Length: 304
Image (cartoon, rainbow, N blue to C red; front, side, top):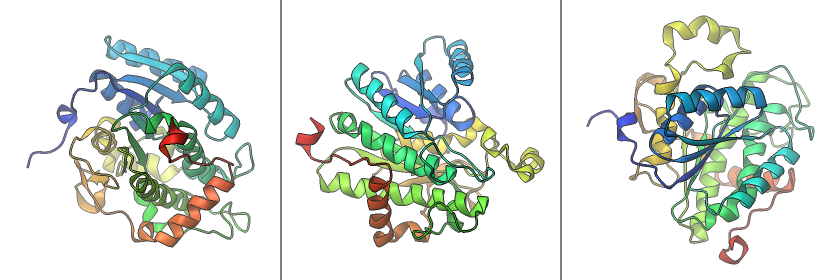
């Protein structure tokens, strides 16, 4: 079988997509590739200046692109709700929601509502965003939600008694927890949508070892990236396959096919063992609805 590349992306004409963290790295490359294939893409970015720079770059590289910028700060629940409201007011469909944005091993920090930054942005922020947009997703035939995780999830353990790492913060462990939470969320969201009879698919992906701005706070990546890391156009391929492959199935996880899933071309790979803990998935779901106060509407009546 030949490698899955950008050439395998089918036409996205008529489809509407949101890509969080689309101003740089694999988020930008994902948005660019979708726009190149005709999708109407919203670049959801925290920084107005960096977002505008990315939008102008995309429009220069893809003159035919249908793309726009919307401000979204995933560390602030108010910003998330405002973004979702603006999008729902301006659009009647959402075919692709790509949960790409993230924070990686920063100094100990909190979100606007006081959650540990990595758990708050990487999981809770995207959980809240998806919940606010779910009524629109549910009424779009064959819509898809793509959750971007990481190989770091292999070291992830859900610290349910201390999700905010208030009793001894370790950036690496907090990051791994947030990436495990991504996988638990993807599986549980797919399960609940399927139980509700929805046509929506939830897939997940990880970029292997890809050089991105996400790694700016980790000196060892800056040293090793030139020797081992993939470039963002290749690192975006697992996300793009998860988002566009017509043969993808709900709950599938895509990553590079090389050694230890570090490099290569996208194939279906197994999620980490802890992501298959159904009790943990349900517990995380309940906590994730409670903390940001976002309740999911799965019924057709609630989605209408």
